[in-house]
Image (cartoon, rainbow, N blue to C red; front, side, top):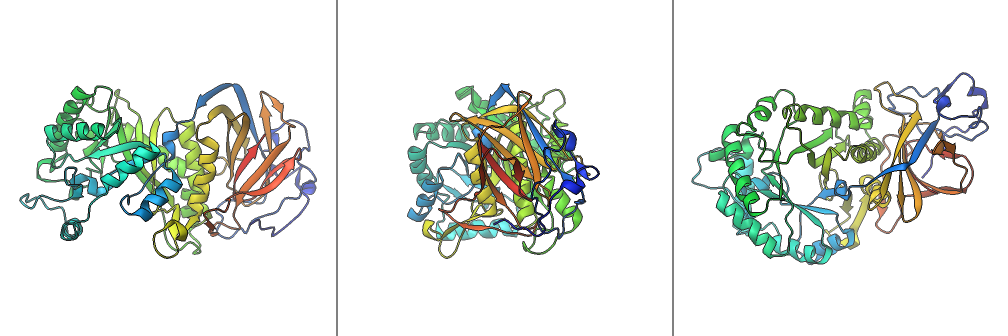
Length: 488
């Protein structure tokens, strides 16, 4: 749905009130256009000046998109309804098991359980949940996950239990999974071990955790040398510094990557509540927060720099446009920096920051697509199995040193496709330069746009998240607060 609150010709503004006008050659290329606004409620930046943007593409330089950046965390593999949902979604990756419960996962019994003889205090909440699971024989769902893997061949990230499993038991787990058809390539040793209530007696200190993690890693790599292993690193400046320093006490050579969990959440309340300016800035510029957190974690590696597995991430100030635009912007940031980010799993597919939700029982028939799911669908459609062109964007700089418009271009199935995010409440005239020449080729412009930062979306599963803006050779105008797909 496109909202046109104010419609005007920008001609009178061109001389004095254009930001980014020098982003394209040829004076006045954007004059005479109809440029609607979105609702400015809560918008944290000045919007009195018109903004333009130009994406300059270098077709002689491109790289293959890393599909593993399109992963998502979820659980539920056992029931027929759950299997039907996963078959429909065809996930790129499965992180198994994901989250806190992986720290106590008994792979031989397919259940998370704590050792009652261990006096280490994991807290009433964790004990209570696992007591309920034990009483109800609630399993994690590996047999169902295996069935789906046999059908869909998704990539799998396994989290191993460093709290209880010996190197020998961990090795048996690797052999068992390989025998069951998994080419195990990625193993995460523990989940968020910087939180003390996710440990156990033998991992009660970071030094102890690092020692047992290194022993498990050695056993696994002796069996499968090309296996990639990651250990958790923290991003919280004060709380996690000591952990990050100590986790590599026994050396850093036993792991190939660090796993980072970064859920960027501020004022995460009801979607239609207007947030503070600082909250909106943080969410719209989530790439900055992710970069800062990543840099902090990496700073503890010294000369032993390693890639990041962003095995849990999210962006949220509620189910609203600000969150969805922040999500889209971070996806672009990940693809721009895929030499650093080796894989990424959104948190989560059906909970936390849900891409999909249900109106009634958990079934495909009752399933709806949220704004997160809409953005993901567009992003996956553009980037999966594509090649990404090297490019630069010239546009207005927001006061946090982030571009008002971010865009990337890919080539896929013989098409050039531009993915662009307009984070302003104004329509933005947009041009594409291909090897220095402004493109006048015919194109198809589609967009997911929002009426305001508070706007939410809930779509049917068969409903496209994209609305057709135009087809032909007209000047491209990005709608306010929008995620755009432009195909040439």
